[in-house]
Amino acid sequence: MSPNLPDLVIREVTSDIWIFSRPFPRFGFLPWGGRSTAVKLSTGDVWVLASTPLTDDTKETIDKLGPVKWIMGADAVHHLFLAEYKTAYPEAKVIGVEPLVEKKKAEGLVLDGAYGSDPPGTLYGFEDEIKACYFSGYASVDVAWLHVASKTLIQADLLFNLPGTEQYSKTKTSPKIPILGKLDPYGSLQKHFLWAQGKDKKIMMQDARTVAEWDFERVIPCHGDVIETDGKKAWVTAYSKYLKL
Figure 1 (tube, rainbow, N blue to C red):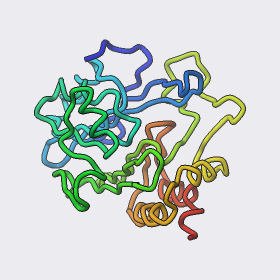
Figure 2: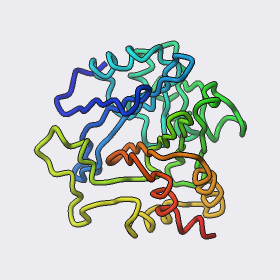
Figure 3: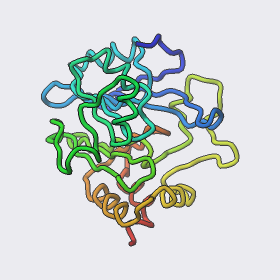
Figure 4: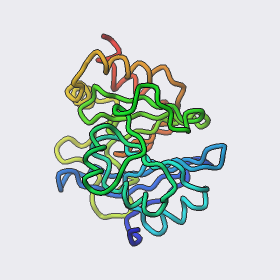
């Protein structure tokens, strides 16, 4: 585990969802922010998107929710802390994406499952309460998840809502992105970025539409502030170029 971090913000979003937000400088200077999310299912088991260090206070908060059964890697680049979580929760299953299988194996961590590597339609045990859509056509091969009960979309790099004021709230660093200022779902910059990241436009169109048809109000991104209302509107706007295909 990691020692506590003075800049970590731990917050209860709903009675079953907690987030762990902190600063993260992309490329060493862009204030991108990072976030992990823990969800307690009706079974009492806990599902964790692990994208920040497992600090003592992070673990204490998660342990109060219940036993961790799944540790999720959201895409090809959000994987730095998977082994740390697995060490703390050895009985949990680590689920990632296809590019991480060999990468993590070389580091000594064997994944229990991987979107894009396992047969299509593979279920990992949480799908009755958390739906998944694997974006194989996206540059970083991301996964979007829907916690059905709370109408919450959880994802890493499929939607940004920067600046991340919450993630930088315990620092003196400005969360505003230099020159750009912001990268939110309603700006043209994000539309162009998402279009550029789509390596297979046809598959992206299908997956973007799948998520657009889900019933959600809130969006929890890894980078930027939580969108508490009109989350579907934010998604449809950001992915409008794909949805019009």
